[in-house]
Amino acid sequence: MKAGNKTLGPRLRVVLDENVAIGPGQADLLEAIGETGSISKAGRQMNMSYRRAWLLVQKMNAHFSAPLVETAKGGSSGGGARLTKLGQEVAACYRQMEARAVEVLAPEIERLRGLLAGNRD
Amino acid sequence: MKAGNKTLGPRLRVVLDENVAIGPGQADLLEAIGETGSISKAGRQMNMSYRRAWLLVQKMNAHFSAPLVETAKGGSSGGGARLTKLGQEVAACYRQMEARAVEVLAPEIERLRGLLAGNRD
DNA sequence: CTGCGATGTATCCGAATGAATATATCGACA
DNA sequence: TGTCGATATATTCATTCGGATACATCGCAG
Image (cartoon, rainbow over all chains, first blue to last red; front, side, top):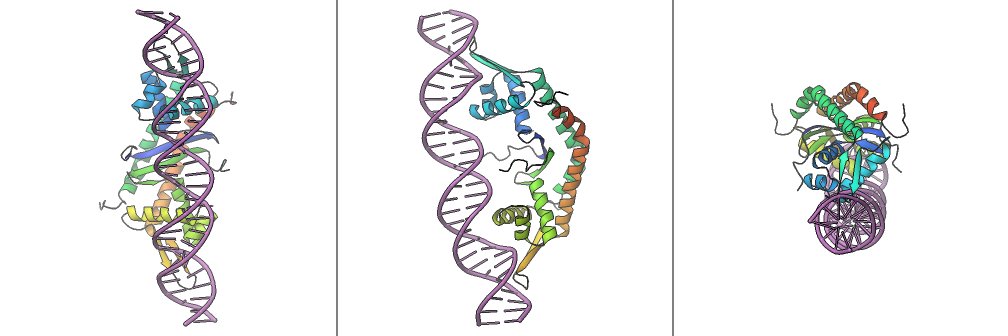
């Protein structure tokens, strides 16, 4: 029952390289990590398993020139994770692209929506 | 071995409704059906199983106000499929959106690409 | 009326995906 | 030093997805 989960409108997935792509999920995850300061909290917040969240972080960190997320083990709070400058930059850049896409594509999307079943305009 | 399959750059997936979305695959399929005049040929051409192609057509047909693809059974050639006006319209509209997205997002994509590992610009 | 080539549809199976689980580890602090 | 909460990592298991396959149907042509 994960219907209604996906935001309506254009979903942008930027394929940077055969193995790396930034999509809505990655962007959300980055932001959630920035907010919560933890991979596990971010995962729980967006209803994603820790494993999945962690794997995504690994992949992103591996393919960029520097990590997007820095992690710490142990410590008073048990550890944590935080966005690096680069991480913030990438997340922000994605959101900007998303916003632009929504802007620019709005008319065509409206047009397509009008052609859906039950939308006799 | 499906690496290198996906085109680099922005991949646009337009979510029109909780159950319907038009992505690159759907657009390619529509166009291939238009070219070949057959679901099965289109599937073979784009290396997609007939089952998958047929299911996609079903879903798209079901959710728009009118079919995007009309099919015919039997006949001299055994049958076939063709794009309806609406189908052509949807395919064209998607391509246009795609083109616009590429245009508009190019600078940010370049920027992100520059941040990839091995791309010390 | 039989064969052909396509659509239409059900069923089965293997691969990929991801969730769940189980540890191990780390480091500050009481 | 022992606890705590988080990261880090392997393993196992269920589910999902899609491919392969098989078969029925259709309608014209010969």
